[in-house]
Image (cartoon, rainbow, N blue to C red; front, top):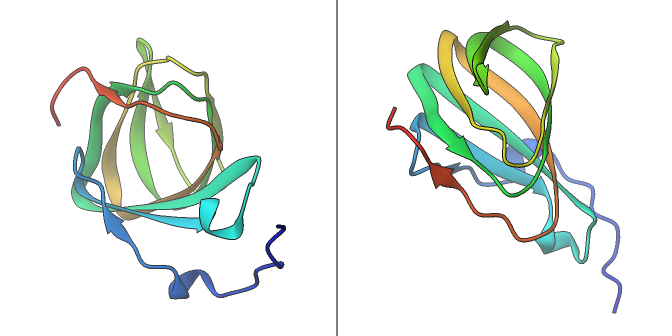
Length: 123
């Protein structure tokens, strides 16, 4: 059975603490709750001192920075990102986040397939 279309303010979606990160929360804005979607649309928020340790995922990440600044390591290269920057992180690529200017927020689109996060280094 197909679920009906969903329209709601992002502020109505509860944020969950990301256990592997520091001062990091995530909202699943569109995902399994809406039915069998092809992608999940997520918003991450990181406060001062926040970030995510070096880790890998089984799925690719497509990201759009909304506000703040951060160093994002992808593989061996570190990028300083700011609002309006876009990122593509291939499946399996080691990556990490370190907040430079909080709050750091970005949209992250991932395939709605099974994912596994493997932490390679602590924050």
